[in-house]
Image 1 (cartoon, one colour):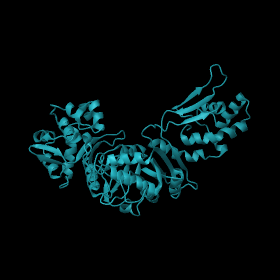
Image 2 (cartoon, rainbow, N blue to C red; image 1 turned 60 degrees about the horizontal axis):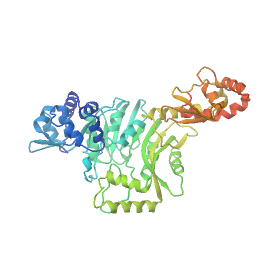
Image 3 (cartoon, one colour; image 1 turned 60 degrees about the vertical axis):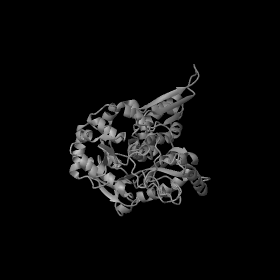
Image 4 (tube, rainbow, N blue to C red; image 1 turned 30 degrees about the vertical axis):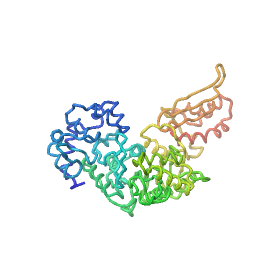
Length: 495
Protein backbone atom coordinates (compact mmCIF):
# COMPACT_ATOMS: atom_id res chain seq x y z
CA UNK A 1 0.00 0.00 0.00
CA UNK A 2 0.96 3.61 -0.49
CA UNK A 3 -0.19 6.33 1.86
CA UNK A 4 -3.03 5.40 4.18
CA UNK A 5 -6.52 6.62 3.30
CA UNK A 6 -7.47 9.53 5.53
CA UNK A 7 -10.39 9.32 7.93
CA UNK A 8 -12.29 11.76 5.71
CA UNK A 9 -11.64 9.64 2.60
CA UNK A 10 -12.84 6.54 4.47
CA UNK A 11 -16.07 8.26 5.51
CA UNK A 12 -16.66 9.47 1.95
CA UNK A 13 -15.93 5.98 0.60
CA UNK A 14 -18.45 4.39 2.96
CA UNK A 15 -21.02 7.03 2.02
CA UNK A 16 -20.42 6.38 -1.68
CA UNK A 17 -20.69 2.60 -1.20
CA UNK A 18 -23.97 3.02 0.68
CA UNK A 19 -25.30 5.42 -1.95
CA UNK A 20 -24.48 2.95 -4.73
CA UNK A 21 -26.04 0.09 -2.70
CA UNK A 22 -22.76 -1.78 -2.74
CA UNK A 23 -24.17 -4.41 -0.37
CA UNK A 24 -24.28 -8.20 -0.32
CA UNK A 25 -27.97 -8.39 -1.21
CA UNK A 26 -27.71 -5.88 -4.05
CA UNK A 27 -24.65 -7.63 -5.53
CA UNK A 28 -26.39 -11.02 -5.41
CA UNK A 29 -29.42 -9.52 -7.17
CA UNK A 30 -27.20 -7.86 -9.76
CA UNK A 31 -25.21 -10.99 -10.60
CA UNK A 32 -28.03 -13.50 -10.22
CA UNK A 33 -27.96 -16.60 -8.04
CA UNK A 34 -26.09 -18.78 -10.54
CA UNK A 35 -23.25 -16.32 -11.10
CA UNK A 36 -23.01 -15.59 -7.38
CA UNK A 37 -22.73 -19.28 -6.54
CA UNK A 38 -20.05 -19.62 -9.26
CA UNK A 39 -18.11 -16.77 -7.67
CA UNK A 40 -18.23 -18.68 -4.42
CA UNK A 41 -16.40 -21.43 -6.31
CA UNK A 42 -13.84 -18.86 -7.56
CA UNK A 43 -15.31 -18.80 -11.07
CA UNK A 44 -15.85 -15.35 -12.58
CA UNK A 45 -17.06 -16.22 -16.09
CA UNK A 46 -20.81 -16.34 -15.25
CA UNK A 47 -20.47 -13.04 -13.37
CA UNK A 48 -18.62 -11.34 -16.23
CA UNK A 49 -21.34 -12.51 -18.62
CA UNK A 50 -24.04 -11.22 -16.27
CA UNK A 51 -22.45 -7.75 -16.20
CA UNK A 52 -21.74 -7.51 -19.95
CA UNK A 53 -22.84 -4.08 -21.14
CA UNK A 54 -23.79 -2.91 -17.62
CA UNK A 55 -22.34 0.51 -16.80
CA UNK A 56 -24.21 1.55 -13.65
CA UNK A 57 -22.03 2.28 -10.58
CA UNK A 58 -22.91 -0.96 -8.74
CA UNK A 59 -21.85 -3.01 -11.79
CA UNK A 60 -18.56 -1.06 -11.92
CA UNK A 61 -17.77 -1.68 -8.25
CA UNK A 62 -18.72 -5.36 -8.50
CA UNK A 63 -16.61 -5.89 -11.61
CA UNK A 64 -13.61 -4.11 -10.09
CA UNK A 65 -13.47 -5.87 -6.74
CA UNK A 66 -15.49 -9.09 -6.74
CA UNK A 67 -14.65 -10.13 -10.32
CA UNK A 68 -11.19 -8.49 -10.42
CA UNK A 69 -11.88 -7.03 -13.86
CA UNK A 70 -10.36 -3.80 -15.22
CA UNK A 71 -12.92 -0.99 -15.40
CA UNK A 72 -12.69 2.30 -17.35
CA UNK A 73 -11.43 5.25 -15.28
CA UNK A 74 -14.47 7.40 -16.17
CA UNK A 75 -16.84 4.65 -14.95
CA UNK A 76 -15.11 4.46 -11.56
CA UNK A 77 -15.04 8.27 -11.34
CA UNK A 78 -18.83 8.19 -11.72
CA UNK A 79 -19.19 5.46 -9.13
CA UNK A 80 -16.79 7.06 -6.61
CA UNK A 81 -16.56 10.79 -7.30
CA UNK A 82 -13.33 12.41 -6.04
CA UNK A 83 -12.16 9.14 -4.53
CA UNK A 84 -10.25 7.46 -7.34
CA UNK A 85 -7.06 9.47 -6.82
CA UNK A 86 -6.98 8.75 -3.06
CA UNK A 87 -7.54 5.06 -3.81
CA UNK A 88 -4.65 5.11 -6.31
CA UNK A 89 -2.44 6.93 -3.84
CA UNK A 90 -3.20 4.34 -1.16
CA UNK A 91 -2.31 1.47 -3.49
CA UNK A 92 -5.82 0.04 -3.35
CA UNK A 93 -6.30 0.42 -7.10
CA UNK A 94 -3.95 1.16 -9.98
CA UNK A 95 -4.45 2.99 -13.28
CA UNK A 96 -3.11 1.50 -16.50
CA UNK A 97 -3.87 2.68 -20.05
CA UNK A 98 -7.09 4.39 -18.99
CA UNK A 99 -8.39 1.42 -16.98
CA UNK A 100 -8.45 0.88 -13.24
CA UNK A 101 -7.48 -2.48 -11.75
CA UNK A 102 -7.79 -3.55 -8.11
CA UNK A 103 -4.68 -4.16 -6.02
CA UNK A 104 -6.60 -4.81 -2.80
CA UNK A 105 -10.09 -6.16 -2.26
CA UNK A 106 -12.91 -4.13 -0.74
CA UNK A 107 -16.12 -6.09 -0.70
CA UNK A 108 -19.47 -5.85 1.08
CA UNK A 109 -20.14 -7.95 4.17
CA UNK A 110 -23.46 -8.67 5.84
CA UNK A 111 -24.66 -10.52 8.92
CA UNK A 112 -27.76 -10.92 11.05
CA UNK A 113 -26.27 -9.20 14.11
CA UNK A 114 -25.82 -5.82 12.41
CA UNK A 115 -22.13 -6.27 11.58
CA UNK A 116 -22.60 -5.17 8.00
CA UNK A 117 -20.27 -3.02 5.97
CA UNK A 118 -17.13 -3.51 3.88
CA UNK A 119 -14.00 -5.60 4.45
CA UNK A 120 -10.51 -4.86 3.11
CA UNK A 121 -8.13 -7.74 2.31
CA UNK A 122 -5.78 -9.03 -0.35
CA UNK A 123 -7.33 -10.11 -3.63
CA UNK A 124 -8.31 -13.76 -3.99
CA UNK A 125 -5.35 -15.43 -5.76
CA UNK A 126 -7.26 -18.46 -7.05
CA UNK A 127 -9.94 -17.09 -9.38
CA UNK A 128 -10.64 -19.18 -12.48
CA UNK A 129 -8.15 -21.98 -11.57
CA UNK A 130 -5.29 -19.49 -11.47
CA UNK A 131 -2.08 -20.86 -9.92
CA UNK A 132 -0.70 -17.99 -7.89
CA UNK A 133 1.32 -18.74 -4.76
CA UNK A 134 0.56 -16.19 -2.05
CA UNK A 135 2.98 -13.75 -0.49
CA UNK A 136 3.95 -14.74 3.08
CA UNK A 137 2.16 -11.72 4.59
CA UNK A 138 -1.04 -12.36 2.59
CA UNK A 139 -4.16 -11.05 4.34
CA UNK A 140 -7.12 -13.38 3.85
CA UNK A 141 -10.60 -11.97 3.39
CA UNK A 142 -13.82 -13.33 4.84
CA UNK A 143 -13.67 -17.13 4.76
CA UNK A 144 -15.71 -20.11 5.88
CA UNK A 145 -13.52 -20.26 8.98
CA UNK A 146 -14.11 -16.62 9.92
CA UNK A 147 -17.85 -17.03 9.38
CA UNK A 148 -17.86 -20.14 11.60
CA UNK A 149 -16.03 -18.26 14.36
CA UNK A 150 -18.50 -15.37 14.13
CA UNK A 151 -21.42 -17.79 14.48
CA UNK A 152 -19.75 -19.55 17.41
CA UNK A 153 -19.07 -16.41 19.43
CA UNK A 154 -21.29 -15.60 22.42
CA UNK A 155 -22.80 -12.17 21.74
CA UNK A 156 -23.79 -10.79 25.15
CA UNK A 157 -22.81 -7.14 25.87
CA UNK A 158 -19.27 -6.91 27.26
CA UNK A 159 -16.86 -4.21 28.38
CA UNK A 160 -13.62 -5.36 26.70
CA UNK A 161 -13.12 -7.74 23.77
CA UNK A 162 -10.00 -8.99 22.00
CA UNK A 163 -9.83 -9.99 18.33
CA UNK A 164 -6.65 -12.10 18.43
CA UNK A 165 -5.09 -12.56 14.98
CA UNK A 166 -7.47 -10.06 13.44
CA UNK A 167 -6.54 -10.63 9.76
CA UNK A 168 -8.89 -8.50 7.67
CA UNK A 169 -10.74 -7.31 10.79
CA UNK A 170 -14.08 -9.00 10.21
CA UNK A 171 -14.39 -10.27 13.81
CA UNK A 172 -13.89 -6.72 15.07
CA UNK A 173 -16.91 -5.66 13.00
CA UNK A 174 -18.99 -8.12 15.02
CA UNK A 175 -17.38 -7.31 18.36
CA UNK A 176 -18.03 -3.59 17.89
CA UNK A 177 -21.76 -4.33 17.99
CA UNK A 178 -21.67 -5.49 21.63
CA UNK A 179 -18.29 -4.57 23.18
CA UNK A 180 -17.54 -1.15 24.67
CA UNK A 181 -13.83 -1.50 23.84
CA UNK A 182 -12.38 -3.64 21.04
CA UNK A 183 -8.68 -4.48 20.86
CA UNK A 184 -7.39 -6.24 17.73
CA UNK A 185 -3.91 -7.68 17.29
CA UNK A 186 -1.90 -9.49 14.64
CA UNK A 187 1.70 -10.55 14.07
CA UNK A 188 1.42 -9.48 10.42
CA UNK A 189 1.91 -5.70 9.96
CA UNK A 190 -0.12 -5.78 6.73
CA UNK A 191 -3.03 -7.37 8.59
CA UNK A 192 -2.90 -4.62 11.21
CA UNK A 193 -2.94 -2.05 8.40
CA UNK A 194 -5.80 -3.62 6.41
CA UNK A 195 -7.89 -4.41 9.49
CA UNK A 196 -7.41 -0.82 10.56
CA UNK A 197 -8.70 0.30 7.18
CA UNK A 198 -11.71 -2.02 7.54
CA UNK A 199 -12.45 -0.39 10.90
CA UNK A 200 -12.11 3.17 9.55
CA UNK A 201 -14.33 2.57 6.52
CA UNK A 202 -17.01 1.17 8.82
CA UNK A 203 -16.56 3.96 11.42
CA UNK A 204 -15.85 1.62 14.33
CA UNK A 205 -13.29 2.27 17.06
CA UNK A 206 -10.68 -0.49 17.29
CA UNK A 207 -7.41 -0.38 19.24
CA UNK A 208 -5.06 -1.96 16.67
CA UNK A 209 -1.85 -3.57 17.96
CA UNK A 210 1.00 -5.42 16.27
CA UNK A 211 2.64 -8.43 17.91
CA UNK A 212 2.75 -12.18 18.40
CA UNK A 213 -0.33 -13.74 20.03
CA UNK A 214 -0.82 -12.26 23.53
CA UNK A 215 2.38 -10.19 23.61
CA UNK A 216 0.54 -6.94 22.71
CA UNK A 217 -1.90 -7.39 25.65
CA UNK A 218 0.41 -8.45 28.48
CA UNK A 219 -1.29 -8.13 31.91
CA UNK A 220 -4.65 -7.18 30.31
CA UNK A 221 -7.93 -9.02 30.84
CA UNK A 222 -10.93 -9.30 28.54
CA UNK A 223 -14.55 -10.33 28.83
CA UNK A 224 -14.41 -11.96 25.41
CA UNK A 225 -11.53 -13.23 23.28
CA UNK A 226 -12.15 -14.59 19.79
CA UNK A 227 -9.49 -16.11 17.59
CA UNK A 228 -8.99 -18.05 14.40
CA UNK A 229 -5.23 -18.50 14.97
CA UNK A 230 -2.69 -19.88 12.48
CA UNK A 231 -3.55 -23.49 13.26
CA UNK A 232 -2.26 -25.27 10.15
CA UNK A 233 0.31 -27.89 11.16
CA UNK A 234 3.01 -27.79 8.50
CA UNK A 235 6.75 -28.52 8.28
CA UNK A 236 9.32 -25.77 8.18
CA UNK A 237 10.74 -26.44 4.71
CA UNK A 238 14.15 -24.90 3.93
CA UNK A 239 13.75 -21.95 1.58
CA UNK A 240 9.96 -21.96 1.95
CA UNK A 241 8.35 -19.05 3.77
CA UNK A 242 5.29 -19.72 5.87
CA UNK A 243 1.94 -18.07 5.24
CA UNK A 244 1.54 -15.92 8.35
CA UNK A 245 -2.26 -16.02 8.35
CA UNK A 246 -2.43 -19.80 8.67
CA UNK A 247 0.92 -21.23 9.87
CA UNK A 248 2.83 -20.59 13.08
CA UNK A 249 6.39 -21.55 13.88
CA UNK A 250 5.61 -24.13 16.58
CA UNK A 251 5.53 -27.90 16.05
CA UNK A 252 2.26 -29.78 15.54
CA UNK A 253 -0.63 -28.21 17.49
CA UNK A 254 1.46 -26.62 20.28
CA UNK A 255 0.45 -23.14 19.09
CA UNK A 256 -3.22 -23.97 19.72
CA UNK A 257 -2.37 -25.40 23.13
CA UNK A 258 -0.55 -22.15 23.91
CA UNK A 259 -3.52 -20.05 22.76
CA UNK A 260 -5.87 -22.04 25.00
CA UNK A 261 -3.70 -21.96 28.12
CA UNK A 262 -2.54 -18.35 27.72
CA UNK A 263 -5.94 -17.13 26.58
CA UNK A 264 -7.49 -18.37 29.81
CA UNK A 265 -5.01 -16.23 31.76
CA UNK A 266 -6.38 -13.13 30.02
CA UNK A 267 -10.04 -13.82 30.82
CA UNK A 268 -11.84 -11.65 33.34
CA UNK A 269 -14.40 -13.29 35.63
CA UNK A 270 -17.23 -14.66 33.49
CA UNK A 271 -15.14 -14.08 30.36
CA UNK A 272 -15.22 -16.35 27.32
CA UNK A 273 -12.51 -17.54 24.92
CA UNK A 274 -13.66 -18.90 21.54
CA UNK A 275 -11.02 -20.66 19.45
CA UNK A 276 -11.40 -22.19 16.00
CA UNK A 277 -8.72 -24.86 15.85
CA UNK A 278 -7.05 -27.95 14.42
CA UNK A 279 -5.46 -30.54 16.70
CA UNK A 280 -3.29 -33.59 16.18
CA UNK A 281 -4.72 -37.04 16.72
CA UNK A 282 -1.67 -39.02 17.84
CA UNK A 283 -1.23 -42.75 17.48
CA UNK A 284 -2.14 -44.49 20.75
CA UNK A 285 -3.38 -41.31 22.49
CA UNK A 286 -7.11 -40.46 22.65
CA UNK A 287 -7.59 -36.98 21.23
CA UNK A 288 -10.10 -36.12 23.93
CA UNK A 289 -7.55 -36.95 26.63
CA UNK A 290 -5.00 -34.55 25.14
CA UNK A 291 -7.49 -31.70 24.89
CA UNK A 292 -8.88 -32.41 28.35
CA UNK A 293 -5.38 -31.86 29.70
CA UNK A 294 -5.19 -28.52 27.90
CA UNK A 295 -8.47 -27.15 29.21
CA UNK A 296 -8.38 -28.70 32.68
CA UNK A 297 -5.21 -26.76 33.45
CA UNK A 298 -7.04 -23.46 32.88
CA UNK A 299 -9.60 -23.82 35.69
CA UNK A 300 -12.31 -22.74 33.24
CA UNK A 301 -15.49 -24.41 32.12
CA UNK A 302 -14.87 -25.84 28.67
CA UNK A 303 -16.82 -27.10 25.69
CA UNK A 304 -14.70 -28.77 23.02
CA UNK A 305 -16.40 -29.92 19.83
CA UNK A 306 -14.71 -31.95 17.11
CA UNK A 307 -16.57 -31.22 13.89
CA UNK A 308 -14.43 -33.06 11.32
CA UNK A 309 -11.53 -35.51 11.04
CA UNK A 310 -9.12 -35.57 8.11
CA UNK A 311 -6.47 -38.17 7.39
CA UNK A 312 -2.97 -36.79 6.67
CA UNK A 313 -3.27 -36.91 2.88
CA UNK A 314 -6.65 -35.14 2.89
CA UNK A 315 -5.25 -32.47 5.19
CA UNK A 316 -2.10 -31.89 3.14
CA UNK A 317 -3.98 -31.74 -0.17
CA UNK A 318 -6.43 -29.18 1.21
CA UNK A 319 -3.75 -26.80 2.45
CA UNK A 320 -1.45 -27.18 -0.55
CA UNK A 321 -4.39 -26.17 -2.73
CA UNK A 322 -5.16 -23.28 -0.38
CA UNK A 323 -1.59 -22.04 -0.82
CA UNK A 324 -1.95 -22.05 -4.60
CA UNK A 325 0.50 -24.91 -5.09
CA UNK A 326 -1.82 -27.37 -6.85
CA UNK A 327 -0.32 -28.04 -10.30
CA UNK A 328 2.98 -26.39 -9.42
CA UNK A 329 6.45 -27.92 -9.63
CA UNK A 330 6.72 -27.85 -5.84
CA UNK A 331 3.55 -29.81 -5.22
CA UNK A 332 4.90 -33.39 -5.02
CA UNK A 333 7.99 -32.40 -3.05
CA UNK A 334 5.96 -30.39 -0.49
CA UNK A 335 3.38 -33.19 -0.23
CA UNK A 336 6.04 -35.80 0.61
CA UNK A 337 7.78 -33.54 3.13
CA UNK A 338 4.49 -32.86 4.89
CA UNK A 339 3.63 -36.56 5.20
CA UNK A 340 7.12 -37.29 6.56
CA UNK A 341 6.60 -34.49 9.10
CA UNK A 342 3.35 -36.07 10.31
CA UNK A 343 4.99 -39.51 10.49
CA UNK A 344 7.83 -38.14 12.61
CA UNK A 345 5.35 -36.56 15.04
CA UNK A 346 3.10 -39.63 15.17
CA UNK A 347 0.12 -37.73 13.74
CA UNK A 348 -2.36 -40.23 12.31
CA UNK A 349 -5.21 -37.75 11.69
CA UNK A 350 -6.22 -34.14 12.30
CA UNK A 351 -9.27 -33.02 14.23
CA UNK A 352 -10.99 -29.76 13.33
CA UNK A 353 -13.43 -27.92 15.54
CA UNK A 354 -14.03 -25.49 18.41
CA UNK A 355 -12.59 -24.90 21.86
CA UNK A 356 -14.65 -22.62 24.09
CA UNK A 357 -13.63 -21.64 27.62
CA UNK A 358 -15.59 -19.64 30.17
CA UNK A 359 -14.12 -18.46 33.47
CA UNK A 360 -16.91 -19.18 35.94
CA UNK A 361 -14.64 -19.99 38.93
CA UNK A 362 -16.39 -23.21 39.88
CA UNK A 363 -14.70 -25.50 42.40
CA UNK A 364 -15.20 -28.24 39.84
CA UNK A 365 -15.12 -26.76 36.33
CA UNK A 366 -17.50 -28.28 33.82
CA UNK A 367 -15.57 -29.89 30.96
CA UNK A 368 -17.42 -31.28 27.98
CA UNK A 369 -15.57 -32.84 25.04
CA UNK A 370 -17.50 -34.40 22.19
CA UNK A 371 -17.48 -35.50 18.57
CA UNK A 372 -20.31 -33.71 16.78
CA UNK A 373 -20.02 -33.95 12.97
CA UNK A 374 -23.76 -33.42 12.51
CA UNK A 375 -25.62 -30.39 11.22
CA UNK A 376 -26.21 -27.60 13.74
CA UNK A 377 -28.35 -24.47 13.63
CA UNK A 378 -26.35 -21.30 13.11
CA UNK A 379 -25.49 -19.15 14.91
CA UNK A 380 -24.62 -21.75 17.56
CA UNK A 381 -23.15 -19.22 20.02
CA UNK A 382 -26.44 -18.63 21.93
CA UNK A 383 -26.82 -22.38 22.51
CA UNK A 384 -23.24 -22.66 23.76
CA UNK A 385 -23.96 -19.84 26.20
CA UNK A 386 -27.15 -21.54 27.42
CA UNK A 387 -25.13 -24.71 28.02
CA UNK A 388 -22.70 -22.91 30.32
CA UNK A 389 -25.59 -21.24 32.15
CA UNK A 390 -27.30 -24.60 32.70
CA UNK A 391 -24.36 -26.23 34.50
CA UNK A 392 -25.36 -25.13 38.01
CA UNK A 393 -28.98 -26.15 37.45
CA UNK A 394 -27.93 -29.56 36.17
CA UNK A 395 -25.78 -30.01 39.30
CA UNK A 396 -28.68 -29.27 41.68
CA UNK A 397 -29.46 -31.76 44.42
CA UNK A 398 -32.00 -34.48 43.74
CA UNK A 399 -34.42 -32.75 46.09
CA UNK A 400 -34.11 -29.44 44.23
CA UNK A 401 -34.55 -31.10 40.83
CA UNK A 402 -37.70 -32.86 42.02
CA UNK A 403 -39.08 -29.67 43.58
CA UNK A 404 -38.75 -27.64 40.41
CA UNK A 405 -41.32 -27.27 37.62
CA UNK A 406 -39.42 -27.93 34.39
CA UNK A 407 -40.57 -27.18 30.87
CA UNK A 408 -39.73 -29.21 27.78
CA UNK A 409 -38.20 -26.95 25.10
CA UNK A 410 -40.66 -25.93 22.39
CA UNK A 411 -38.49 -27.26 19.56
CA UNK A 412 -38.41 -30.85 20.89
CA UNK A 413 -40.44 -33.41 18.95
CA UNK A 414 -41.08 -37.06 19.74
CA UNK A 415 -40.38 -39.79 17.20
CA UNK A 416 -41.62 -43.34 17.77
CA UNK A 417 -41.04 -46.59 15.93
CA UNK A 418 -42.63 -49.97 16.44
CA UNK A 419 -44.55 -52.85 14.94
CA UNK A 420 -48.15 -52.13 13.87
CA UNK A 421 -50.58 -53.07 16.63
CA UNK A 422 -47.93 -53.33 19.35
CA UNK A 423 -48.91 -52.04 22.78
CA UNK A 424 -45.77 -49.91 23.09
CA UNK A 425 -43.29 -48.53 20.54
CA UNK A 426 -39.94 -50.30 20.35
CA UNK A 427 -38.06 -47.00 20.13
CA UNK A 428 -38.85 -43.50 21.40
CA UNK A 429 -36.59 -40.60 20.50
CA UNK A 430 -36.93 -36.97 21.57
CA UNK A 431 -35.21 -34.77 19.02
CA UNK A 432 -34.30 -31.07 19.07
CA UNK A 433 -35.11 -29.05 15.95
CA UNK A 434 -32.76 -26.23 16.87
CA UNK A 435 -29.28 -25.67 18.30
CA UNK A 436 -27.16 -28.82 18.23
CA UNK A 437 -30.24 -30.82 17.15
CA UNK A 438 -29.47 -33.52 19.69
CA UNK A 439 -31.48 -36.71 20.06
CA UNK A 440 -32.40 -38.42 23.33
CA UNK A 441 -33.52 -42.05 23.35
CA UNK A 442 -36.12 -42.79 26.02
CA UNK A 443 -38.20 -45.66 27.35
CA UNK A 444 -41.93 -45.28 27.94
CA UNK A 445 -41.55 -44.02 31.51
CA UNK A 446 -38.88 -41.41 30.73
CA UNK A 447 -40.77 -40.19 27.65
CA UNK A 448 -43.91 -39.81 29.77
CA UNK A 449 -42.04 -37.84 32.45
CA UNK A 450 -40.37 -35.49 29.96
CA UNK A 451 -43.56 -35.09 27.95
CA UNK A 452 -45.42 -33.98 31.08
CA UNK A 453 -42.90 -31.24 31.88
CA UNK A 454 -44.97 -28.20 30.94
CA UNK A 455 -43.74 -25.73 33.55
CA UNK A 456 -46.79 -26.15 35.81
CA UNK A 457 -46.24 -29.35 37.80
CA UNK A 458 -43.08 -29.98 39.78
CA UNK A 459 -41.00 -33.00 38.80
CA UNK A 460 -41.82 -34.93 41.99
CA UNK A 461 -45.53 -34.78 41.19
CA UNK A 462 -44.94 -35.82 37.58
CA UNK A 463 -42.78 -38.79 38.61
CA UNK A 464 -45.37 -39.93 41.16
CA UNK A 465 -48.18 -39.65 38.59
CA UNK A 466 -46.30 -41.51 35.86
CA UNK A 467 -45.19 -44.14 38.37
CA UNK A 468 -48.81 -44.70 39.41
CA UNK A 469 -49.98 -45.06 35.81
CA UNK A 470 -47.19 -47.51 34.90
CA UNK A 471 -47.19 -49.32 38.26
CA UNK A 472 -43.59 -48.26 39.03
CA UNK A 473 -42.46 -47.29 42.52
CA UNK A 474 -41.96 -43.47 42.46
CA UNK A 475 -38.65 -43.71 44.34
CA UNK A 476 -37.32 -46.23 41.86
CA UNK A 477 -38.55 -44.14 38.92
CA UNK A 478 -36.90 -41.00 40.39
CA UNK A 479 -33.61 -42.84 40.72
CA UNK A 480 -33.89 -44.07 37.14
CA UNK A 481 -34.77 -40.76 35.46
CA UNK A 482 -32.80 -38.15 37.43
CA UNK A 483 -29.43 -38.76 35.66
CA UNK A 484 -31.15 -38.20 32.30
CA UNK A 485 -32.98 -35.16 33.69
CA UNK A 486 -29.58 -33.65 34.52
CA UNK A 487 -28.30 -34.36 31.01
CA UNK A 488 -31.51 -32.95 29.51
CA UNK A 489 -31.04 -29.70 31.42
CA UNK A 490 -27.41 -29.41 30.29
CA UNK A 491 -28.38 -30.17 26.67
CA UNK A 492 -31.27 -27.70 26.55
CA UNK A 493 -34.13 -30.21 26.38
CA UNK A 494 -35.48 -28.84 29.68
CA UNK A 495 -35.66 -25.21 30.82
